[in-house]
Amino acid sequence: MSKTQSPRRQVARREREPHTQKRGEERRRQLIDAAAQLLQEREIDEISLNDVAAEAGIPITSTYHFYGDLHSLLAALAVRYGEEFVRLLQRPLPAAKISKWQDVLELMIARSVRYYGANPGARKLLIDGKVPADIKFADRLHDRVLGALVESTLARYFELPEFPERTRVFYHGVEIVDLMLQLSVIESRRITSAMTRHAHLACIGYLRAFLPEKLPRQSSG
Image (cartoon, rainbow, N blue to C red; front, side):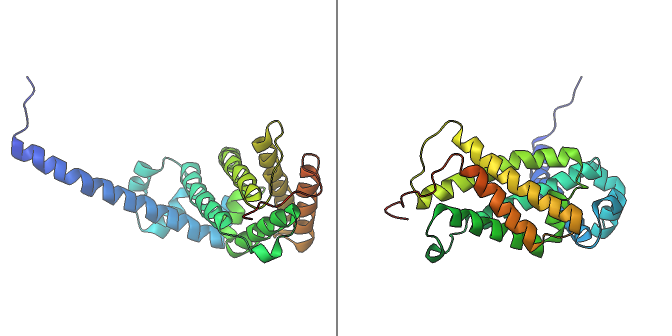
C-alpha cells in the first residue's frame, strides 16, 4: 500500500522544485558558455564533452544529466547563436543607405559577415565545413526564419510583388549566402571580401529571377 505524503512534506517538495529547476537552468547555461569559450579557441573536432565539463567546472557525470553527448550541447549553443543572429538582423537598417531593394540585401549580408568576424565560435558552428550534419540540419530550419525576416525587411521598405512560394524563395536566398560564406571559410579559414561580394552577386542574381530590377518604395519606408 502506498503511503500518502504529509502536507508538510508536500509543501517542502513543491518549494524544492523551483530551486532545482533554477539550478538546472544555471548548469545548462554554464555548459553552453563553456562550449562557446572553447569554440573561440579551438576547432569543433578538437573539443570533447569532457573538455566542456572541465571548462565549466561541472563534473562529467552531472554534465551527462543535462547533455547526453557533445552534439546535443553544440545544438543548444547553435540555438543561442541563431537567436543572436535574428536579433542582429532585426535591428533597423540605415535608411539613408537604401535606395533600391538590392541595398537591403547588401546591408544585411554585410551585417552577417561582421557578426561572424566578431564571433569565431558562431562562424565555426554555423558555417564551417566541419559542422556535424545533425547540427547543420537544425541550422537549415533556422535559416527559414531568416528567410522570412529578409522578406519582411524588404517589404518594410518596398512593395513586394506576390508570387508562388515567395517566403521559400527568400529562404533559398539565405541558403545561397550561407553556401558562399561557407566556401570562403573552407577555402581560406575566414570570410574574405571577395567571397562576400560573390555572396551578394549570387543572392541578388537569384532574387532577380523573381523581383523586377526596380521596386516602388513603401510610403512609410
